[in-house]
Length: 241
Image 1: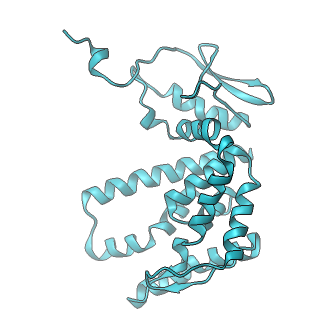
Image 2: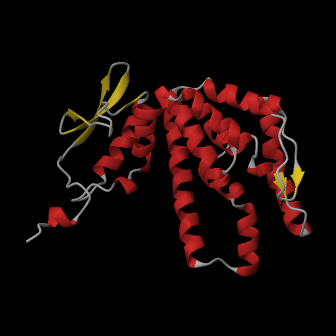
Image 3: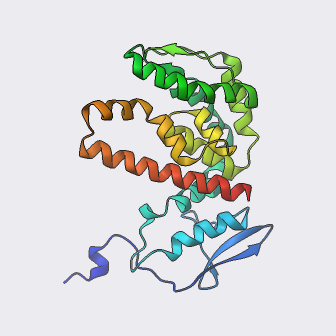
């Protein structure tokens, strides 16, 4: 006869107390006084106490079973510790790839109300990117791909490559989540909160929902993305702390 552990693929919680302690120039997450580990076996640590506490809070919030799906900050930390150090060039290249087809550069052709909304909300963010980051984007009308200047793509790659592993991992995660390197940089620099970045990335969908409604599956997907954007806001804020 199968035991409850056999029927539940999630590991059972094996610790009582979660804490954070200084270690090696950073801050380690401790489970009953022992270092938590990444899937690759590295000590789970963060460069700031605030970020380590964010990770610790997710461990502390677990119930009888450990659900990593409910631990998005830890999953991102696993990436920053296990994968990014050996693939920094590729990760920066992903950020540059999203810059080459940035969501904010594709303005609708119609209806006029949507075009006006995009210009009013996306325009200032693109202007910020040019002034603050030196990223000059070409704006397009419609959905047909329009290449961005090579200098812009290379500049995005170079800016990403300057970041530490945790910031770079967050930036790449944000670019993929939002479909926009500009929005990811705005979050990383503290220019936009997670809710605002999410809303800008879903501006077209919001406009359509106001007209036609939103089906349950799309609403659930959007809510997951919103939660991840809010987590990423906390991630960057903790790194700046």
